[in-house]
Length: 116
Image 1 (cartoon, one colour):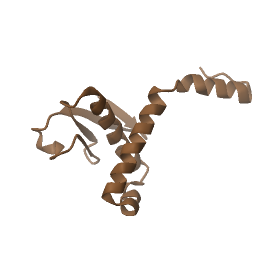
Image 2 (cartoon, one colour; image 1 turned 180 degrees about the vertical axis):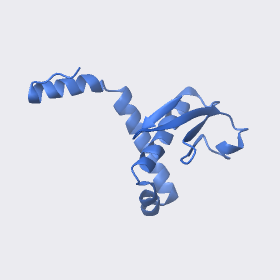
Image 3 (tube, helix red, strand yellow; image 1 turned 90 degrees about the horizontal axis):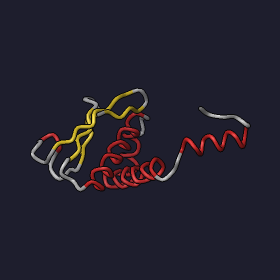
């Protein structure tokens, strides 16, 4: 499984707490250099998906070169709170909206265009 961000593919790797690479007390972790996102496969489904989006937001910040700045400005705890909230918002955008339909309606109204 992969998620593609900015033309870079991150491997999604379900694992369990016995995997030392997941780290102690982590539900998920991203390794930017290896392009791997590890997720604790034993989490309840809702928490597993929330953790996936959380880690994807870490990848977004890294791919847009904002990681270091955000960590410096917000501190470790503030940065993790920001990432957690951004992950929840990203989930909502994707799952609570029909974005293709919204795009089509917007372009039709503004430009009288159609998106295929």
